[in-house]
Structure formats: structure tokens, C-alpha cells
Image 1 (cartoon, one colour):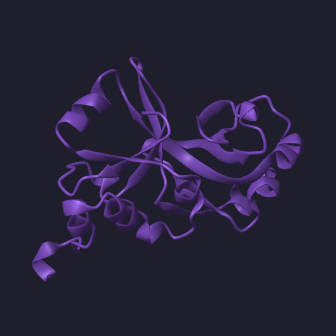
Image 2: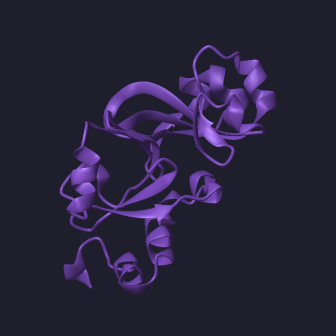
Length: 178
């Protein structure tokens, strides 16, 4: 599952994940960790985490990565060499590990995003949610991860799956207004 996108189904009961697209960064028997790609936050890197400004730019928004540990900052980056990632996710994309010098990371990364918090699942929890079809799975692309158009990501990735998914992608949030 690592490197896949989880697309929230229209009936997913948890409001934290309504119409979200989550990049799975880690998935094992111990559980799973992902980052919500389409929930921009209100904080700006330059003001809230200035030490990361060289990686993302001062005006970059800190995205809401999920409801778990919302005070923790995670950095997802596209590296020149995937071996530089603390946790490799897909292609040259991975999570920045701790202990690295930030000035070295600037030279080793092409682009980066900062997330406050993450999505987490305990052992077997994500598998159960997938069986209930709370989530649809799709391959992730680097451009999905770094696309600045967060508002359209859910619809775009769902429509790309084709068939009835394309119909669901065009549904309004409240079908009664249709």
C-alpha cells in the first residue's frame, strides 16, 4: 500500500476525512501512516516554522496532514536521490528523517511540503476500512503529491479511476442541491 492514494468514499463516516486524498507513507502489520494531501492549513511556514522556509518557501502553507499529533510537523519531499529520504514513499518522494542538517536538505530536494499531523491506523484498522469500501485505492503520482490545486484533487483522482468513479467524482457534497 505504500505509495498509494486512499480516496475517501462518499459514505466514509469520519468527518476528518470527508473528500480527502491520503498518501500512504507506511503500511505494515503494525498499522499505517498517511498524509492528507488536500487539506491546506491556515499557518504559513515562514511564520510558524521558519527553519523550513528554505525547503518550501516562506509563503508555503502548512497542510493539515491528519488528526493524529496535529502539533507534529512532517516534511514530505522530492529528493534528488531517493536514498536521502528517512522513509521512502514512491519514486524520489519520501519523508524527511530527523537528524539531517536542513541546509544539506535544500541541496538534496527538488520541492517539499510541510504537514501538521498525520493520518494513522492501528493494526488491521486500514484493512478493515478498505474491506468496507470506506476508501478507494489509486496509484499515486509525484504530480498528485505536489499539485497546488488541493480543491480539485479528490475529484480529479477519483475521475481518473473511470467507470462509476467518474460519476461519484462529479457529485456535489450535498446531493440534495443537485
